[in-house]
Image (tube, rainbow, N blue to C red; front, side, top):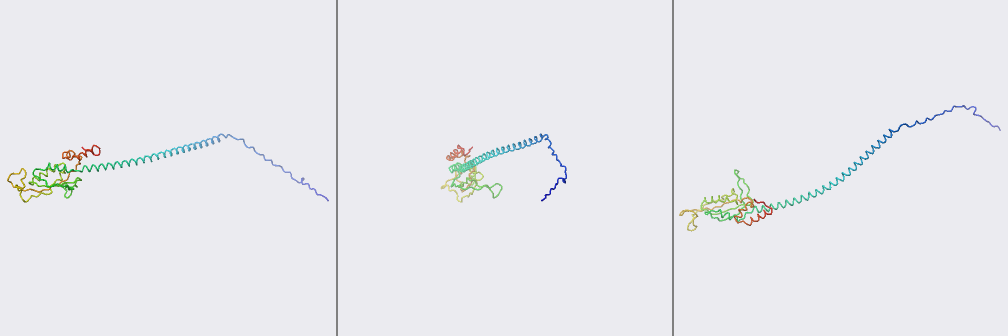
Length: 262
């Protein structure tokens, strides 16, 4: 058996081989600017970070200071509330003291007024009765139907018998000069002459009357308000008229500083 040998080498075309030359990388240049820029960036970041940390620390300090101030404010507010409470208590005591003083200032001892009335009653006047009233409004000058309200001290009515209308008028003027009464409020409520003559054999005669002259008595009533001058300003009068108890109490209040007197 035969074998077939074929030689392909003879028919093969010889082709030139392309050789590719590999270029070498160029050597590295000056990298200093790159490093400088990197260092600047790192420094900038470091500065920003440091400033941020500084701000955080400052914020923490301020927050701590704020808490301290809040605690101090709370303490001060509590103290202010305590002060307001004490001031309210002081004001209450002051009001109570003032009310207490007003009571004493509005007292008009009857013993003092009766002695004042006795000293100012003329010989031709005989007092029949004395009574306390709530006082009467004092008419305002020039305004009809209007007047000031009566004082808290109240008023008084004095009824009696006079030898004449002139004696009643004299008695009126005498009472208007009393420091215990409001002069503008003292007035004649009524005055009426009796129908019968005064019998000398039974009733006697009026003082300082001419002999053998018939007289007719006058029944009268005077009214007026007590003065609204505080009793603390009338100590000398109270002492003179025998109201020693009230004067002593007022002086005790003055010495304790509750009341001021001239």
